[in-house]
Amino acid sequence: MVRPSMLLALGALATAAVACAPADNTATTAAPSAAASTACTKDQLTLVSAGKLTIGTDKPAYEPWFKDDDPANGQGFESAVAYAVAGEMGFDRDEVQWSTVKFDTAFAPGEKKFDFDVNQVSITPQRAEAVDFSKGYYTVKQAVVTLKGSPAATATTLVGLRETRIGVQVGTTAFSAVQRVIRPSSLPKVYNEQIDAVNALKNGQVDALVVDLPTAFYVTAVQVPNSQILGQFSATGGEKPEEFGLVMGKGSALKPCVDKAVDALRSKGELAKIEQQWLGEAAGAPELK
Image (cartoon, rainbow, N blue to C red):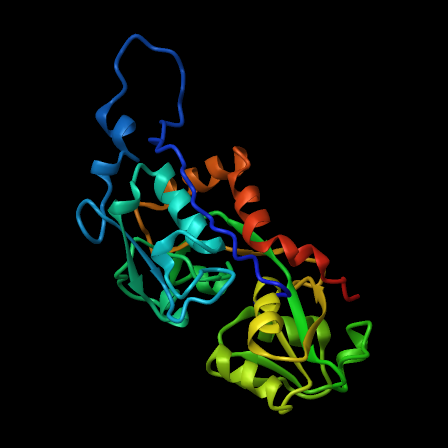
């Protein structure tokens, strides 16, 4: 949740629709079996709504992930990614429909009213017990946002933040990142909604807010006057990087096709282009050690 001047450029993506090919490409004179050749073909997919790809996300849909609180406009990082994945799976723009899904509901156990959900959901082993994740479509770091002049504003290292009051949103990986990497002397203040944590920073109830880096750019540019990004840090303390994944119901038959779409977008450089367009300023935040 991230940074300075927001990228407001229009992100219309046109990706060629592709059908998933069978894994075995061995030459043969016999025609491939129907099951192998149509496994990822649009009209063979098991969908929430026949003929439509239903994508879930939260509301409000914040920048830079989405623009103008409208996931369907194709603008913003995650809207662009969602339509690019849909295109790789063979869906036109008018064959995509959006469903409002609260953040923590997306990865809770139970039946889903979406085919996949895109909402900055970090892939974790605990969450993966209840849902399926696609391969990661974005590798993210956490960021520290402060008010200029606050007790945290002069810190140049993670150790320098240990005596400050830190705010986080419940259910996010920021909470565990604060405890594992920053290790403050007192527990972070936890808020049910992102906007509550943002208001706590704005009102001086916390000295620093920890969110993902792209959101931090939005917080400082739009939500909290006189705020700044102090820096970014790895949420895993040097372990495997945190990644966002598309969420599907446990045992979803779509997972191989969604994974193949994500792989195709990465190999063609499309994910990198989308990230550069909508999250390009993320590289400007200093690394906190």
